[in-house]
Each structure stands twice: as C-alpha cells, then as structure tokens.
Amino acid sequence: MNAAAGRSLYCYPWDVGNAAQHVQRLQQLGMNGATLAVSYHAGKFLRPHAGAAPRVIFPQDGVVYFEPDLQRYGELQPLAHSDPAMRRVLADLLADGRLDIHAWTVLLHNSRLGSLHPEYTAANAFGDRYVYSLCPMQSAVFDYAVALSADIASRGVRSLVLETPGWLPHAHGYHHEFAQLRSNVWLDSMLGLCFCDACMAAGRQAGLDMARLRSTIACAVESYLQAPVDATPAQAHAWLQADLLALSDLAPWLRLRQQRVTDLVSAIRAAIPAQVQLSVIATVQRPTASNWLEGMDLAALATLADWIEVPFYEPDADAVSSDAWDCLRRVGSPAKVRAILRPGPPDLGDGAQIATAISHLAQLGVQELSFYNYGLLRPARLQALGEILNAGK
Ligand SMILES: [Zn+2]
Image (tube, rainbow, N blue to C red; front, side, top):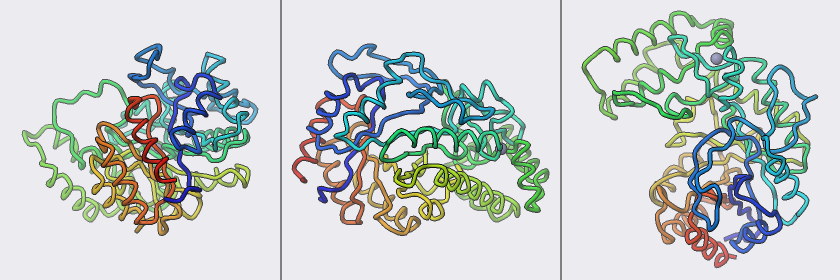
C-alpha cells in the first residue's frame, strides 16, 4: 500500500463535534483526509456512536455548511444551515490543518431549491416535475452550480468532490417513494429522462425531433403501466438496449445530455483556483456504468477532473474488482480513480472483505481511497478499518 496515497473518511458536519478531537480520531484510524459534506440534502440517519444526540437525525434540506458569499450567486441562492456551529465545522477543520479537507458538494439534488423554483426542475415525458432534481440544461441551474463550486473552492479546501452535477435517476432522491408495480431498468430509464423547456430547446437545436421522442416514450410508458405484465430484470435490460437502437433520436439525445454535464464540470474547473483539485463522483447508481442516465461521461470528465470518485458499493470484493475494471477502461488511468468503499452493511460485511477489496484495487493500480461514512458506521467497523489502514502503512 502506498503510504502517501489519500485515505479520507466521509463525514457529516453534525458528527464532527470538536474539530481537533475529530482530526485526532481520523488520524488514529489511518486517515490523512476528511471528506466533509458542505452542501447536502435531507435524509434520516441513525447514529451508532456513543452519546450521539440526536440518535436519529433529520438534517435541514438543501442547505450549505459554511457562510456563503451571496454576491457570487444569481437567481438560485444557497441557504446556510440555521445553526452557526454547523456553519463553522469546515473553517475549524481547515484551521486545524492536519488533514486534507475534501469538500463534498451536492450540486443539483436539492429539493429546497426545487420547491422554490419548480420551473428549473427536471420534467419527465409526461411533464411531471421532479422536485429533487434541478435540470442542468437550465442556465440558472448551471450558473448556480458554478457559483457554489467557486464559493466553496475559495475556502482553502484540498479538493472539491462534486456529487450530482447531472440528472437524478427516477428511483432516487425522494422519501416515501410509492409504486405498486415492480421497478425495472427500462421503466426507470424512461422516467429518468428530462423534457423540460430547456432540454426540449437544446435537443431541437441539435436537430432532434424532441416532440416525437417525448411522445414515443410517454406512450410506451403509459402502455406499460396499463398492461398486466411485469418485465423480468433481463427483459428490462434488453428492452432498454433495443430502444437505444430503435428510437433514432434517443442515443444522440443522451450524448447531448452528457455533453451538458461535461460542459458544467468544465466551467467549474475554470472557475476554481488551480491548486484546488476537482473530483467528480461517478454516479449515484449501481453498477457504475449505468451513469450515462445521469448525463455522466467518465472518459470526458476524466480529461477535466483530477479524480473520478467511484462509489464501489458492492456486497463483496469480487464485485468491486469487476466494477473497477470497467471504470478503468472508461477513465483510462487508475491514477485518476479515487475509490469509495463502505466497510459495513450492506457492503463488504467483514474485515476480510474490505482488506481484499483494498488489495484488489491496488492490484488494478487504484491507490486513492475514501470510506463511507464516519457517523453511520459502528465504532467496531471503524476500528477494524483503522487496523487495516495502519497495518498497510
Ligand atoms: Zn431539463
């Protein structure tokens, strides 16, 4: 194991407490970095650490964990967390100086902004808005993402870790998702495509028949929902592949979406100081290669970013290896890949699996590692991870 390589633990601001003590804890676990949420969404988190209060936390939705420089922003404005202590965590960790601080920045998955600005949210083929997903084809959304990234990067962080620079998939992002029919990759993909005014205009400008594409997809989904059938997973995958060939405007449209996300990341790179590294989280889905639905193009992004940060959230080390092999094929170099591993349920259930996954990644040339997540893992899991990392130094 390369001792100089990054070892960073994902952390929420509400789990940090005293910055100096937190840094010491992470160093004892063999970490040289912390990946701190600085722009984050709502959720419900069970906290196993001794004395954690509240034991179950519902963080404020779509807020930032620092004092934003509001002059930088246009129509879409960030909102700072209401608790000044939460807004100080980033500055305190940076002032401590012993760890590399990576700013985990959720960009377009923001239901607070989506509620305030429904006109900028993604809209499916039926025109239904997804409040949790701002559409990057909208100029105001694009500008907000660039301004937020530049604002955070100006604070002295080692890297920006961008999450959701593109479209959220249909089956992600909202609490209490209800459907009394089985989801499948074909249905989720069709419902994950945005046909908002900006997307329609961008497609038309590229010569695509967007109205026909939208109505074909709406008809297919409508018919499927009415039919007394349920696709098997294999059928749904095959249907999606067949539609990618059959709908002549679909693949060019998906590539246009990828270009838009690449353009956004390029604009972010240009807006942040040269010494701040840029990392892009490859996907919020499994397996990683399905990320084209979010508008991600790993090969293009790897030419802009210092790191493609890949959540290898798999049940065993072999699945981590095969997903990594495919990622490397797309990214081009293991030196650009930062792995995120989850050393606890539902992934990599025991110490042996996590050690094997780390060793498999090293064999593929992937040396940079992040781990998820300080506040969610039991102390015993963190301890076991720390022993593995410290033994490898
Ligand atoms: Zn759109």
